[in-house]
Length: 286
Image 1 (tube, rainbow, N blue to C red):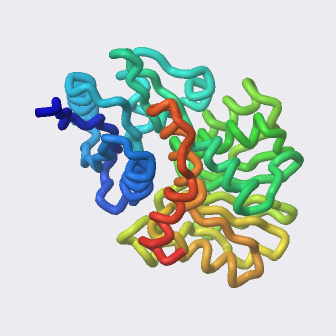
Image 2: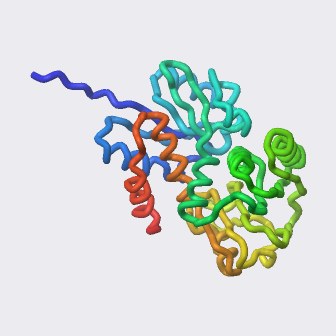
Image 3: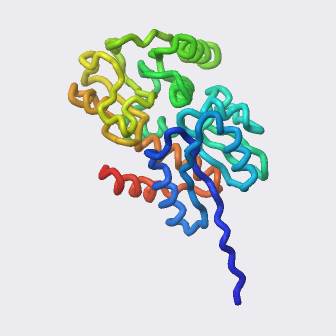
């Protein structure tokens, strides 16, 4: 009888909440398309249990894992090494197990930039940008905007300390002119803004009616409005922006493109992006 190998290589995502995260669909489709005996697990990990989850993943020989809300910053203290760009961002969304050494990477920002260019037709160089939030996704996106030559950036955030820290980081360690402003109720988006990004979890399933508290009448046809939320793809935030003539970009593109980078980091192979996109399109009718 021929020798059989029933072992599967494991990757996955740790988050809280995470049940609504559709990442598993695109990775499982990618693995099947390439004939890889890999599995992607969606794992609920509460904040106080992150250390145990990382130790468990190491012990079980996970090839790597993703981090989503709220773990992208806290994971830094649990890793053996952090890539320079992820260190600059102060956030990690992808961990690679390199022969027992856990290395933190961040694919969010690069995934966002690819989506902005390929799906949105927007070149970030010279653009005036506004970002809502200052958490892990916001840090990744703003650093990439800085490195890609954006002209200016306004950070709106309710937590002053976190928002000011991100603006200071960008001013001190990148060429970008960044400033912070408190996110007050019905915040106005400055005239002349070209790219507006919601980098918060407001509007994430099941909060389908949720939307960031801004003055939507300050959004106009000259803006490209982006949401990092993939589920639902058409958030209330994007619907409101689209109704005012703005070009909109949903979170599915960013999800696919950042996932493609993670796939390459884990497997050493180029990601089958078309299969990943098709899996999400089937799920959401996109």
